[in-house]
Image 1 (cartoon, chains in turn brown, orange):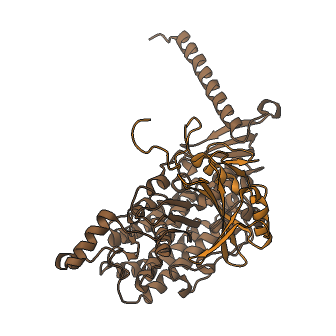
Image 2 (spheres, helix red, strand yellow):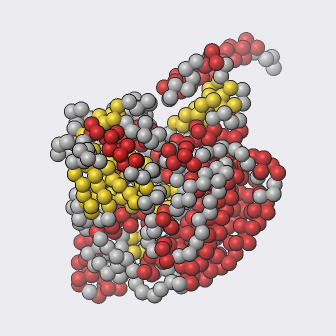
Image 3 (cartoon, helix red, strand yellow):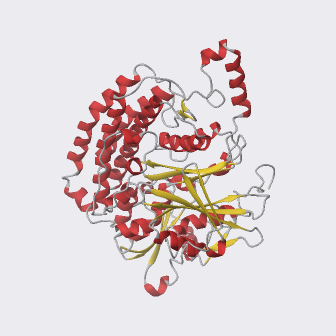
Length: 429
Length: 137
């Protein structure tokens, strides 16, 4: 068959045209974004569009990178691809109906979101919850932290070429997913916390399952460190990369492990305790290096501390109810509902009308695996929140990306994005 | 902050200070001087239909005192603008862009005040209370 050369040439030309026009779009786009490419031709720099479908951006992050050879000159994040208007949706729901929405914000730590929101509403109502519920909340939060860090470690190592880690981390994560499924019926979108306590008493085999996991996990963390910490490639890709000073970190709103890796000794669990964290003994790992390596070390240590906290919660778990005695807010026990008239009435009222929350505004922050997760809830005295705003750690940390990447190599951008552990669900909300 | 404060409220263990919007920079600087070193959040509440319509809210944390202050400034609908606090805390950049995008409150002297969540050609500001949530657009 003869090869239609002319057509090929034409197509190539079209292709080039198309490519040029899309490049122009990108340049215009980037000019709008912080005027990245104002003098592209003059400065001999080039604009590179990274994402939103790039696998190592951990979601739908789009970066406009201005590069000079291999060196990053400017880096402008473009977000909003995952914006679903959760804050607006919250305004149309009863207070309890917001809990499933909070899962979907940061899908790697649903329980932390549940906790922050429930604590905020409990603060508005002025409600005390039983100690047993607090302990279980703390235990599940720490398991969630381990799970989130495992996903971070697996994907971060995958980005940097350590493919094995991904399989190892997801093997242990699977155990946690089974625990969450056992306790709440869902693997990821747990929605297990309720305003006033927890949804259900955990099943009998739950405690043995958690104990088995906590016993197994420290050895696994050693195993990960064996694979990575002495590895010259891993050290070469992480040490001295993406440095961030303590002053910059505070000025740019960075929280969580990246802040502690920069030498700021701040952990909300210890410094502004919530949900009974003051009853637990744990260390807050700190490093002064402020690079990708320091963030790796800190998260590994945090996993160990989380195991300790979860163990303490399991050992010291008090007996008692799992939800506060507030019949107008907490749904009644199923058995009671079938036998007692009042319980049936309360159940009907809560489900159909919700419950009124006293007017006021509160801000409740918790330490999520990524940093400070805050819920700002404004009530006007009705059964639906007037405004719910989430302060998300990734959203703030993303602003520091340019400071960490400027003047570094293009390949380091991938390492830095992995090290700040962003979740686009909570950035875009 | 003598002469700057118009209202102060201590409720549910949280301190809320109200300042006039013209003096927001002055207030923020005074708070920073007092040891509150970390800007956590900038957001807004639409108080429609009451006037002034927008309540711009700042949450500021002190690492040393382990305390938090909520600073609020009320902004009219007719001239929905307030000074940007980027000069004091660079982290306000994204937060202020978000408020501009979703509420339509402008921040004076912001270096890059463009939409952040919604597409650039989007009309309206979704988190306003009078934004239609159903029907055809």
